Image 1 (cartoon, helix red, strand yellow):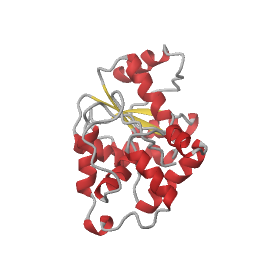
Image 2 (cartoon, rainbow, N blue to C red; image 1 turned 60 degrees about the horizontal axis):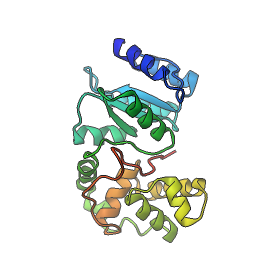
Image 3 (cartoon, rainbow, N blue to C red; image 1 turned 90 degrees about the vertical axis):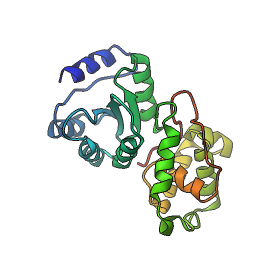
Length: 222
């Protein structure tokens, strides 16, 4: 509880954020999300016996539009992939500054994903290896031409608003296309969609992360 209270106190100093509460167990956390309907939840995922994945899943089931930022003492690609599959959309080190935390939270609140620099490549490779041949033999055949365009732009690291500018449509239209891409590819995050796109040859394999310390592609599946 000490870490949670310290984190809440730190973030309360930001004029861009409103802290609605803290919780020390899954039941309290779910009740808090149900009663306050926050945009983002911070989860200390791997500090105890429970790895926190069930908590992430429960929070997202309670509020589908919820962004989940995992606070962690260290990064492991396999764990990050598992957390993304559970519903996490951001990852921040416990030693991050207030500015880094605020930027991660506000980015996730916009429906984008935040990853530390250097981690994205390993995470995508995990997703690529995780797709079996049956699902990736011809996974893009159900996508419309516009949905392929959106997926291609996502895989280059463009945010939803940037894709909207290129296609000359509204961000909400792009969001709808992304939802359809997720549904048709049977994935739950932009990174999974990007992995399918790379394996299918829609875009070349990316070796360097995009952006300054984060993956900026739209990660919203709501």
